[in-house]
Image (cartoon, rainbow, N blue to C red; front, side, top):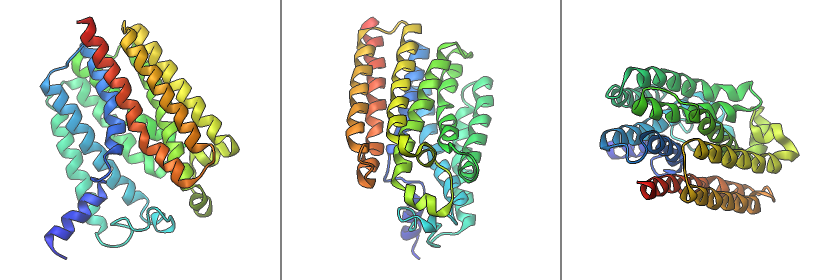
Length: 288
């Protein structure tokens, strides 16, 4: 195998051609960063959190594929992943994951001790998450915790403290992650039932669509309350209305529970996050 082919497999491992994954992490993290700073947080923190998000999501993909290597071969969507198909080794996957995490940690070291301490928690949950599919009825909740760590880290990097608004941002992020990852789980539900792993789509059963829409509502409500606590104005509120409209569109996609439509709904979620971040940026800019 040529070096070019091997690099192509490594990029496939970290889902380089599928940026939706790291965008789903990035937008709420940037929301928190802007709210904490009351505007543009500076190039240093913007670079640290943007690159750190991309790197840790990529490391998470490596961890996930390592944990699921024996499961993925039984799922139509994942059977041809590089590790599952035997085109790269377990040793390579572990090495890539460790290197990506170390580079991300080096970035965090340029912030402060509080943020560095939180990064250990983020890493721990990232490692644990893939294994919870074996025994936890709602592993998407664990994923939500892993994906939400960027929010308190953004506040500690700027303010060196975690104010009460972080709780509302975290609750909204957790609800959002469970909502969109349930859409994702609806794609693989038949395969997952055969294998015997746990997902929110299986746990919710015939209430899956209602559950997803309720979680979107909780997300919007929590983020609205976060806006109230930080003095956000009409620009932010407008972005939440647009985000709610996007969530309603997702209902038209997932109500029939068709695999491709559910996958499309999942892939569109990063636009919801972008919408709210733009609302934060615009509102703070107008206020300034």
